[in-house]
Image 1 (tube, rainbow over the protein chains, first blue to last red):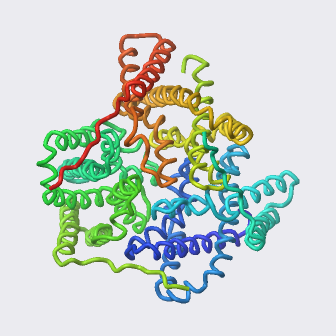
Image 2 (image 1 turned 60 degrees about the horizontal axis):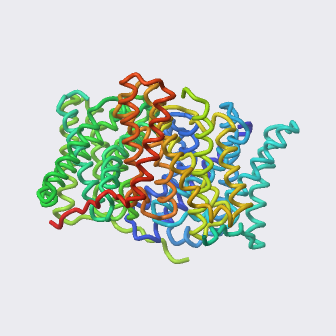
Image 3 (image 1 turned 180 degrees about the horizontal axis):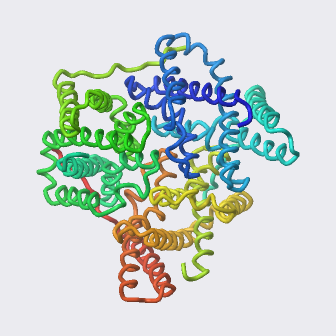
Length: 206
Length: 206
Length: 206
């Protein structure tokens, strides 16, 4: 991470993911503890999975107060301004999109720094961004959203591939990070605007 | 762990969690292997998650025969005295409550010994106690019980906070451990007696 | 691993598991990305769980291109020859059975080499073979197949116990591996042929 803004966007993304987890849980008749539990795993599930697979332990969010503060700030905002936050979904969506962009880059860079090959690093970037949502949906007994709705993980993968390409072109890291986050955000927003989806895969009857 | 009784209570808790896993599975038309698989993950899921997050590997239950013996003793008792065990649910409930108290302390102490900050250590204590049940319920396609019923994880968190407080007051460890387990048990029993629940969190319509 | 064929069978098993994951996902109205995600976790879930529990990180499939190539070859074959693959289920079943045999041996040997006790090593062998399928079914909201249908995990456990026995008899490793895979395949095929199942465990009413 070459630019400090990435660190702050990481905390912002974590906070937004925690809020989205709580809001999802709030449609399931969970108690407040359950909702917060879902909020935490949504926020840290992706990064935790990446750290465990790569062998980075204690996992990142355990190494300080930063992520916990981000998460509990998200909870506080959601509980105090409940109606306001629920009405803000469109804005949250934007922050969520920034979040997956930033998480992808952080995961990708972390993996590259640990010396794994580029294909694996791309997967680790995508993992950081999407696995929190997969765990959220699995714990609340839903089919994971990213498996059947919207361009989401594929935006992360595409962004990560561009990052590697810009890196190979020797772009300075800060520029590369900005461009990559921008590409991920653009793909997601355009796919929503033009209602692009990935085709359903259907196993033929045998 | 300053007192040997903690070790034995840990094995007892593991055995009781294995039994509770098998009994839950036994309401789902799983085969005997499936029921035992659920029993194992219920018993070791919390401690395993804690160990993985903290980076303690091979995870604790792989480092000897103790936990396996506790778990398979639980299976043997359940299979041989099936009706008796099913009728003993009230007693099992008491042991389960002792179990979460002990698991909380063990997780908390382990985390503190590894040098993480107190907030993280509290979360690791709670994780040790409750995540086994969360995995059990997720694998059997139920909404995790602790997300919508009874005071459970919050009892663990409260106990863990008291532990830190007593520690700060320089209570001897053995006394602290006994007091903390007592507090967790008391909160859980009182919450059941007085039918206390955590309020449901409901996301407002937007 | 004493014989090179084990390595190739490992890749073949991984490919077949990836195909089986995609085909399962294809009955759930997932999009293509979701189907491939399920394919990946089916293929690498068991070995990843084993590696994490034992503390082998970065987990095996991150340490090179081999497993990724096996998985994506499986995807390519499935997408290009969709109808053919769906009709090939019987052949796939055979390869799947070879797969669980090979995965069991690899997990068992890896665990023994890391110095855990034999009981734990048997569990790690079984884990390598079956946990991918458990994660696949949990993510797609099904009760895991191995908990209520067919002799599957128990074939792996039995094979692993024979491996330890043959090892104790000082059989050469290559012979031992071949015999063990053969035993696992035989148990599975015979159990299907004679319609053997593990009895359901039912918790008595209390």
